[in-house]
Image 1 (tube, rainbow, N blue to C red):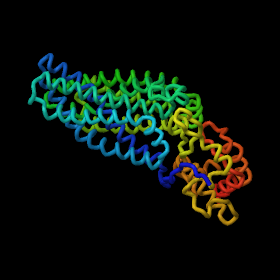
Image 2 (image 1 turned 90 degrees about the vertical axis):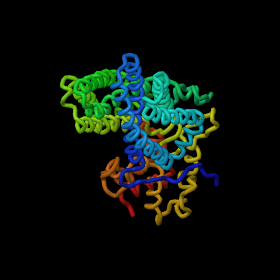
Image 3 (image 1 turned 180 degrees about the vertical axis):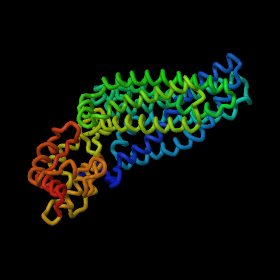
Image 4 (image 1 turned 45 degrees about the vertical axis):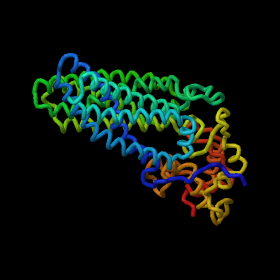
Length: 445
């Protein structure tokens, strides 16, 4: 019997694969966003320093560069491969889709990243050891390489939401998939947010400046930069939301809690208030206060934004043709990709998945509960907790509480198996499979 090209399912019963990836990604995003934003700030400060003969600005750039080396380029270089590893085991077909579509684009990003690493080392260790023009060119090179990595990654992340042009499905082409209104909205929003992160984290370095006047000057420069960037980023986010696909807006309305939008407003307001306070009273800026502000940006700014973007993309994980549970949900003629849905409708998942144990290929009374658990694992565990309690990350038992087995089986056969729920994958199941899944969800043995 012909099998689908599915991989084993990675399931973490405590957090779920999506949240494991999310925790790593949030740490990485603060490191990477700060690095890119700081690179642009460095280019600005170095230009001013050399033009106006301000060596203290160059010393600030050098000291901030050391922070980046220790924080962004150590922690970021650890969490970056961590994202690759966790994403690969969580959604191997999703990563495969990205690599097959953008392998040379990703290779280009790695060239830029190597340039970043060389640039930050040159910026820090060659300050004062090479002539001004050479050092300034190195700083600018670092800024261009850093922003270039962001531009490429944002294009790929945007494709994960949906291809820039619908022609990509039939014509292919890197640019068709890469560039679209959502991509440009993300570039503007993230560039502004990166500058805001650089301003907040830069306060850690500014707070340790011994010269009171220069400390006051840098604190206020960073505050203005952060406030302007926060406002531009928020406006960019509003535009980006208008470029979302229709299903993402439906998911946002269905799945994001009522407190989400007010909390984002509160987060932006809190960041602006903090920066305004440091502008008005620079003396209050201390290393611990600036560290707390950076942590707040990560917890209250990056985490909600990244998790909401991941939620809005569901049920897809790449290009609106690979579901989060690895199933190919539509044909892509340009790539020669065929949907898995017809095969699943004809044979069911248990008979089509290559890693299903032989004794679970057919549902029987003896294996009904285990077959149901296997279907939940394959179809649902990427987004839902499968424990026997109603706790955890979007637990299935809580979602189905109060439904008896026949009613739940009918719901599965009607809504899930036909793909009529916009925020859930199309999950074809035979009557026996639907019954087994329902049996497992109501706690059958």
